[in-house]
Length: 106
Image 1: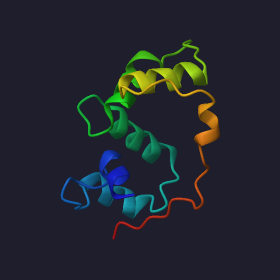
Image 2: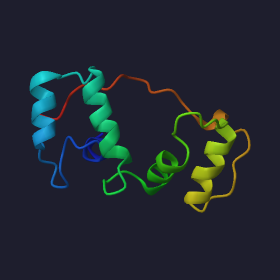
Image 3: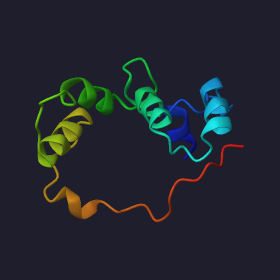
Image 4: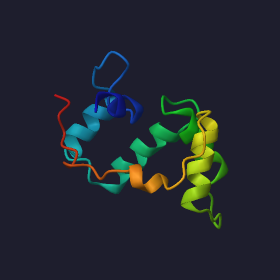
């Protein structure tokens, strides 16, 4: 979870809580408010942010109003971005999280 928290802007690269992380902890400790989630998403998807390069590419090329795509197209784009072979039946390899995310930064 620490790498996700860094990518989402809650922690810095030294695992110290950021100003945004302090604000979220004070005002939205379980990260349930839409505004908090949008800011976390921004940090993950901003080209200058610490999120993964494939996510920046997906956000910039696919997530626009009226843009339609299939799960196979997204899987292919991610695999291409990561220089991986296309995976057939990629959904079989996915697993649902076993536990929800709880605030554990402090």
